[in-house]
Image 1 (cartoon, one colour):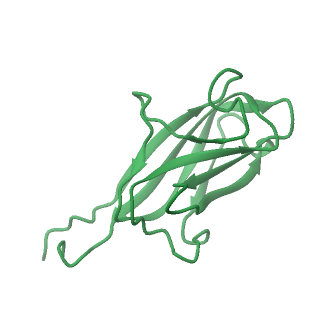
Image 2 (cartoon, rainbow, N blue to C red; image 1 turned 90 degrees about the horizontal axis):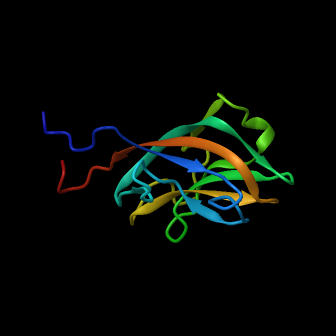
Length: 144
């Protein structure tokens, strides 16, 4: 049996929405690790899925939506479609199945990519959402 370099891996990050911080505008933002650094999924990753957990319920002055995506330049696959805040009450969560949301190119990364969220319709004024993404490093001729 060969050594398996393709073991299951996971990244996680937290999005904090506030009037003066991330979420104060209609834009895309990177999930960040505990040190505040934007988290990246490495090139060669084959994304399997993941999920999110609401720590503090998001709020907005309008009917904001959130969408979780991988990358913005090499891949725009949505892991979570634009969802209304009403589906994100405190201590609630959900899963995303990367395979059923795959773009025509699939969920194999050919370059490092950020895990991002995009705010639509209205800016956010409060909320904390933690998300995670599960992946394996795809096998190549050099790793098998």
